[in-house]
Length: 130
Image 1 (spheres, one colour):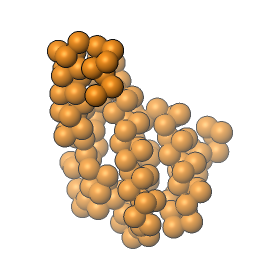
Image 2: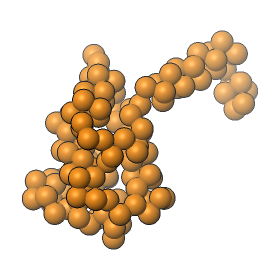
Image 3: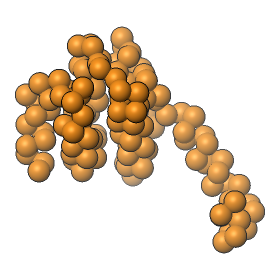
Image 4: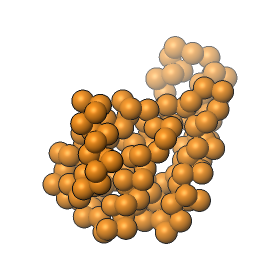
């Protein structure tokens, strides 16, 4: 392991455990578009994970990356309900603008995800943050 060459075994073990525990708690990228109860299954879960003394931007960035990778790598053509969930995720009040912009840039570049931009609020977020 790369960490072992630079750090003591206890530090490496603690870090790996930390990463594994946080990843296990993350909302699955398949849940975000598919859920029927967005507020309960996604919003509240994510908010609980990231709203600490300091906003956990690292966790939000991981969620955004995992979501866009899931959508692009699986060549997903989202249904209307799935598009609404993706739009709601993008509009989360605690999602930092830089992450939102990066996510929207990926969405715009994917032909099958263009429908996400049909929400005037989402489109405006992209235009305002560029």
